[in-house]
Length: 480
Ligand SMILES: Cc1cc2nc3c(=O)[nH]c(=O)nc-3n(C[C@H](O)[C@H](O)[C@H](O)COP(=O)(O)OP(=O)(O)OC[C@H]3O[C@@H](n4cnc5c(N)ncnc54)[C@H](O)[C@@H]3O)c2cc1C
Image 1 (cartoon, rainbow, N blue to C red):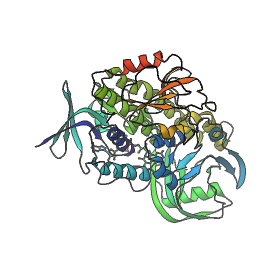
Image 2 (image 1 turned 60 degrees about the vertical axis):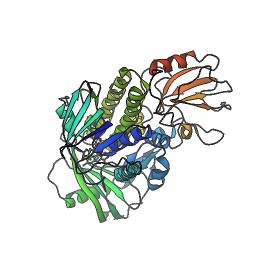
Image 3 (image 1 turned 30 degrees about the horizontal axis):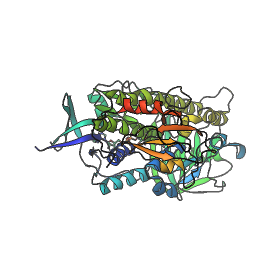
Image 4 (image 1 turned 90 degrees about the horizontal axis):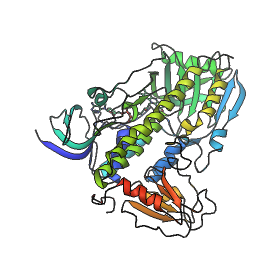
């Protein structure tokens, strides 16, 4: 059988594997994505992109294609017995350094189909109807066996193969699953109702809060209905919706997707093995869908990982840089599991019988996860924090970022006091009064977190950070 060679083999062409491949290709890496399925997702599964994901999509030029397809939503309200109880959006309104302070309600299928098409256009289309059946890691690289009998040699392998990850199991990575015995039905469809349709997430308080109404793109609406048993019919789901909405009534004129999921919670013991095989997305964290964090957290994994692998591979960065992927992303996953766990349990248990209101209060308290904007790496007041977005004379700072590069932002008229390496793009912001960064130079990572900072007069700290990040003798691929 033939053997192939590439930089990164990606197992799984869900949204996370596809994004890993797209980001890798942007940076000039050779990628091979393998998936057992015959096509990208057509309907169902995740339903919302959060504000941080929207910023990251902008950095890689995908925002304009996706944003017009979705529906912005920044409000959660509570209804009981047909009466309005409360409405909140403070956690979105209060976000600083961000121009899209809302969820974009948009099905996962749109994200997958766009990325799938982009990869084909980059001559890196997904190898479909193909499974990975073995991976061997040696001193010289990874050897992945495909169901076609081919062996692919690569520097890295990424297991983005979902919650039942074959890669995770093959490598013996622990993944102890908690099952809180909560089962949700999900219905996407075209509805008819006498309840006024608003672009808000509505949580209904009946006996408990077991029904949530989620606005979606186009003419679709989604309902999550807690059933607490795996055996139920579509009619029982619709009856529960009608009980929660009473005295209003609802019917589905068209059902686009009807599914269920049992809540399972886990974070993988390790995200990397032998510094060569990495796990991303559902392969290393699973949790309830409450809070809409699965897809968003997985996409953020991809943004965190791919530039690090390329820096190690192409710019002589120490392997320790790739290890920071697990150091940074595993605590985020644990916090996401805690958030969605608290949310899903609150729909069933409430000391005061105010489940729906409790739910929205948890959203408010845990907004950093749900908006994605509270994620930071470390305790430093600047380093490891997301870069705030703000208007430039032309455009905005996020449109000036480029995933292929670190960005050296100079807030003032000073010139960099050192010659930046080719993987750094310099952006001068002369009129910086309206930014929180006036008088500073900031080194921004490809994933839009601040790596280092200095005064304009003395940029030694940034130069030192860069010198430690890459070897001068390394190949300079991003400079082409
Ligand atoms: C029924 C269901 C409903 C959901 N609903 C929601 C929701 O309402 N809201 C929300 O936020 N999230 C929801 N999610 C979660 C969300 O869909 C996931 O977080 C997201 O898909 C994770 O993406 P991923 O790329 O990590 O994994 P996946 O999307 O699972 O992709 C993994 C890919 O790996 C492939 N694969 C697996 N094993 C192999 C192998 N050995 N060889 C080759 N290919 C392989 C699979 O075919 C698949 O394409 C839902 C998930 C499910 C299953």
